[in-house]
Structure formats: structure tokens, C-alpha cells
Length: 304
Image (tube, rainbow, N blue to C red):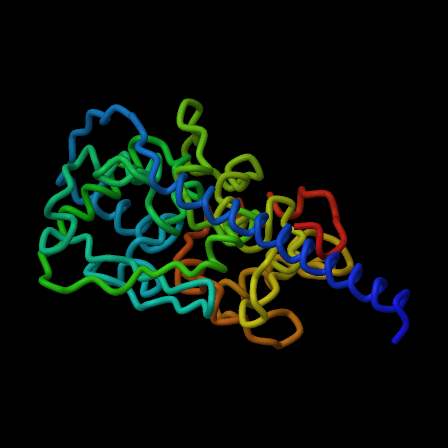
């Protein structure tokens, strides 16, 4: 091997090492950013709240807890609110909705702290909650928030140990890359919370309902691979009216999907999709969501 070739190989080796070190520094900065954000304490005042035992209010709270807020489904806190099944996301980590009855952490939270958790994604200690998608339903009007908390408080206390919440290094990195949202409070504009009106079967109301879809299908609803996610995480589809999306779907096709989890082409929804909550949506919420999705500009698949 000539001295020139040796020098060339040495230069290539040095370049590779520098690239690896640079990449490592980039990854480390992302991990450090995630940890710092999750340790941040938010100084947010506790809201005033008066719960209700009115049967109509409790019924509304139960409905929302099983649909738009999705508290009382198996993937979240479970039908009895005593803890959901663990969601195992490979190297991203594992998350489990905790026991929020009075026999669990619900017993140490005040009513006002529960409202703050729903609105701001901030726990009792002032730090961000992990994975709970408050940004998908914190637009609900005050009457609906009161109904949800009233329903939670009406449930029996259950003694049950909480499941694991373990976020891997890849999970932290993907969060910082704008992929799966784990740091919730850091994504909410706490001084300008969204404000939703009363339920209506319109695209305007559907715009709020559709926030339920953004965590997977992206802010443009055009789907595509979640940035940095491992291959075991399914690739969300396009739900705009583009040929690569749901352009040829009818309203009946859409409702069939919500009811059965079966797509127009006969395929089943991936289990990663929260079908239980979708199935529990009422006629107004379904119509509003359909009208809003149909109002979106048709975008090609993958724009997220």
C-alpha cells in the first residue's frame, strides 16, 4: 500500500469518525432537550370548578370519556378507569394509562388539578404528562370538561397498581423530531388554549374533532411515515380527498370504517388505531368529522 493510499484511507477514516461524532452530538442534544422539557415546571393557576351529579351531565361525561377524550377505553385508562393495557412501541418505549379512580392517582389529584391536566397536559407536580394527548381534546368547552371530571369522580374507587411508563432513547429522539408526541405540555400554547363551541354537524366543529387524528395522520392529514419511528410502528394513511387518500370514499364508507374498522377496500384497520374511541363517536361528531375531512385540500400521501 502506497503512502498516498494510506493517507487517503486515513482521511476517509477521520471523516467517518467526525461524522459519527457529529451525529452523536446531534442525538445527544435531542435527548437532553427532551429530558429538560419533561423536567420543566409549569406555573399555571388552578381553575375554579364545580362538579355536577346531574344524570345528563354524567351521561355527557361518560360519552366524551369513551369517544373524543378517550379516557375510558382499553388503550387509555380502561373501561373502569383503573388503568389501561400497556401500549408497547418497541424501542420507542412502553406507556400505560394509570389508575385515575379514587383508589389510584385520582385519589391524590384535586378536581382543579384534573382540569389542569386535561387542559394543559400538566401533572400534579407541575411537570408534563407523558403521551396523554391533551392537545387533541383540550378545546372542549368548559361544560364538557366539567362533565368529564364529574363522570370520573362518579366512578367507584379501584385498588390497582399502575402499569409501566418507560420511554426509550429512540422515543425521546422521535419526540424531538416531531414524531410520536410524548412531551405533551411542551406542545401546548398555555396562554392561548383553543376554544370549541357546542356540538354541530359542521366542518367548523369537525375541525376540532379532527385534532383526534393529527397525532397519527399529521397536521395536514396526508399521512406518511412518522419521523424516526421504527418499522414496527404502522405508517398512517392519507385521509384527505386525494387519489392516494379517500377521494373515492362515500360518507357510508367512512361510517362503516368507524363502526367496523374495515376500510373501503376490505382491509382491516391496524390495531394501532383507536377504533374503540372512533366507534363510540355519536352521529354529530361523525358527521362533523366527515364534513371537515372533505373540506381539506387534496394532498398527496406522505406530507403529514
